[in-house]
Image 1 (cartoon, one colour):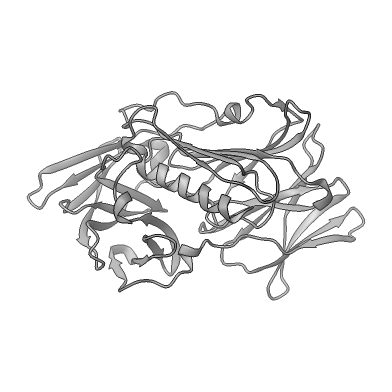
Image 2 (image 1 turned 90 degrees about the horizontal axis):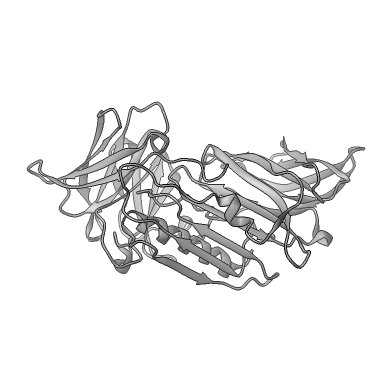
Amino acid sequence: MSDELETGLRATLGHAAQGAPMLPSGLAAQLITRSRRRRTHARAVVAGLALAAVAVPVGLVAGDRPGGDVSTATAATTPPETAPRRQDLYELAMKDLTPLGDRLAVQDPGEGLAMLLWFARNEKGDTLFCTASQSRSGAGAYGCNEPDEESMPTVVGSTNLIAEKVLYYGLTKSEVTAVTTLVAGGDKIPGKVEHPAGTPWAIWTATIPRTTRIDAFEFTDAQGQVTERKKEYGRLSEEFTAEPVGPAATLPHDLVATLVKTPDETLIWRLDGNVIGQHLVRAKDLLTNMGGDRYPVSMQDRGAHWFGITESRTARVDMIAPDGTASTAATRPNPWNIDVRLFSGVHQRTKDIYAEGFELVGYDEAGTVLWRESQPAVTPLWR
């Protein structure tokens, strides 16, 4: 995947998701990127009405990614009380394409949701490898590209590299029957090689703990003979490894926020030393959607932790469940003189908050309601 494409996808998805709650109807942002490897097509769709930024795969592998020339982000209008009908991502991806064999559904360990991998043929007769993924907050991405058979086995992509577990996936020829992840210290983690009916090549997957240092992916045939080792694997994008600017902000429930300025002003959130989220806070984008309108809050979550940024007049943020129960987070100023306040809370809900839906409510010091932001229950992005 080219550097331009990786940067473009990250920026397009991240900025679109930040703006999703209040975008004018029909507004879309389009980013054109050029792949150094081959002409391909990818689209990123902010299909939900999430308050949180989409979990972008922030460090995709250095291989043939189903992305390329055109990345398009679209966002919906202010969230209503009930979620509107949304377009099926698989149907969007398959416009003007013909299916080639069965789809393979795999678990994205970072989102706890299914991810689709499949093959298709375009009008020119080219064979394409396609993917569709979805986030808990309602966003999704899909793309197709033309695989290079001579380079197989290939490492095509990965899921979010800051999740506790990461799924790597790629393509291989039929003689390969097994894949193993070789990790530092000599350990081996077995993966899977699957060949859906009617497809031209096999698809391999490997789920690896985030903290595992990968040496290579090893491919073997039916006789157990090693056919190839690939040393391509995911890397965190530069904002997650950049040196912080100024002091760290320590928040309740063991969360720490730091500010980096590489490549843009971004808050990096950590729990127990591990990155769990980010917020773009450069002045021109601060709590502002792609239409130039401001919104009052941007929230993300990890497990029971929910955290984010809100406008500076907000003293408290409540997360209210459909049954009326609420969890509360007091806000606090930040040490970088950015015009937002930070918050961090813990909820007691046992089910996924996005699957059930919720409302965020902001209050001032006197307890007066300043704003309300509804998150409708998120439904799957394909059938």
